[in-house]
Length: 322
Length: 244
Figure 1 (cartoon, rainbow over the protein chains, first blue to last red):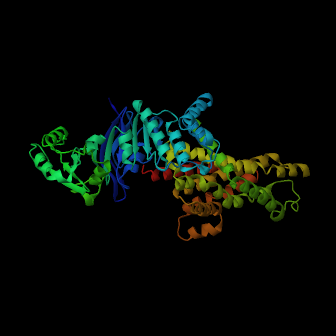
Figure 2 (figure 1 turned 45 degrees about the vertical axis):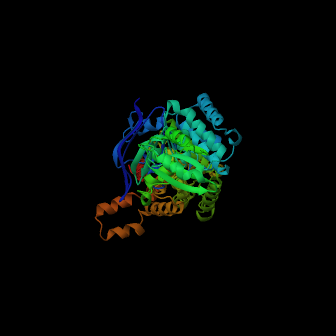
Figure 3 (figure 1 turned 60 degrees about the vertical axis):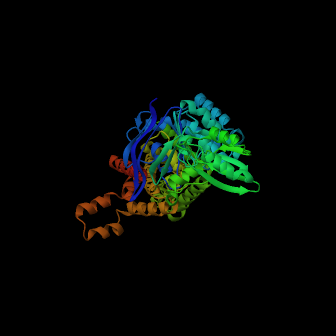
């Protein structure tokens, strides 16, 4: 599968500030890349460069085989772009705005009508079609922004915080939409909502201070946490000491951590060894030592923690506890 | 080409979506008529001509046209919609031309609404309608040049008030540049050729020749090249913002 979007050593400087530094990334058809990073990390700048709004200071960006710097129009024909905050002409009606976008994209008469009807239906905009955009709620504005981005059924979608400001139902709807569209497109979304990465993205890229710090699936990123795949077992306080002894006989362990004792139960965390969750062994050893297991589960860790470890400079070297 | 039309259409309907359009048209028609009759002495002249009407156009345009052009790009930059616009598959040139055409068409509508004056002089006497037609065309061209200047300054700032004031000031310089007020500033030190060049850039003298019935290709070329030059500057201003 060839890359639909390819960033090659992309750099963007604003005066003395380097907003994006030496970024290399590629996204293939069928992929949904989640773009993560703290505010000011360079996510929006990168997306603006892919969409052809800003020109990189260095490196090159290819979209569907066209160079953004030399063939901007061809690139823009193939991209659907939702800018941050979905800025739209406030004095236009929803219908007027979508009509304008359709016309600029070269659709006339029946084709224009058909395209608009299709996105209006997809994003349930029927009720507000003749309302002025200024009078719409944040959620509707965002959906109008999405509608113009998918109007021409583009091969590449670049969505800057597509679910920002939406209520949980709308979020769910937009995520479903993204997943449905994903099969024949290459999609980049930026988000702060890490659950969104797990819900819709096939891969995530974390950037910090303009640099790429990690790329991988949600699972691969979670594996970076020391407590990923730890086995958490809850036993009665009375049997905690025995349980610890039993577990220590286990060969390949990353160690045992005591967690809190709450009431009559003690929680023990068996750290993974080389990322392997020793869940069967833990269960087996405890059972054969006749220890009551109140609960037992494998900890995955949270993307929020990965995010913090990767991007919070103060937290570097900090091993999160969940 | 289609995209230029789409942008012009959107922009033009944008004028009429707000009271700006109606305020502008009413003020323009009212002021141009008032100047013609009260200050220009339309009746006292005893001539069937619209000279007194057209002679005030440069001064009216001076502050009215920047009011039309100030929103062209400033508003897009302020509201962030420029990001939406410039990521649509259109060139900067097409966007600049589309917006300019809309503003120009809008001023043309305002100018066309002064037609009762033309009818009036024809009822009262026997004017040279050729000169009047040429004057209308010249007035429209001059408005275009003012608009192009305004478009450029609108692209340089996100503040509409600044766009208005700077455009009005620059338009003032171009209007006045044939007069001693401006030329004396340069006469002391600048070489003759520069002073002559500045004098030749005067909108006033070019426009006066047209309204006097002297239809010279050079005046036409002057206004058209002014429009082209300032629109080119607008394209550069818009692209600079993008770091191109």
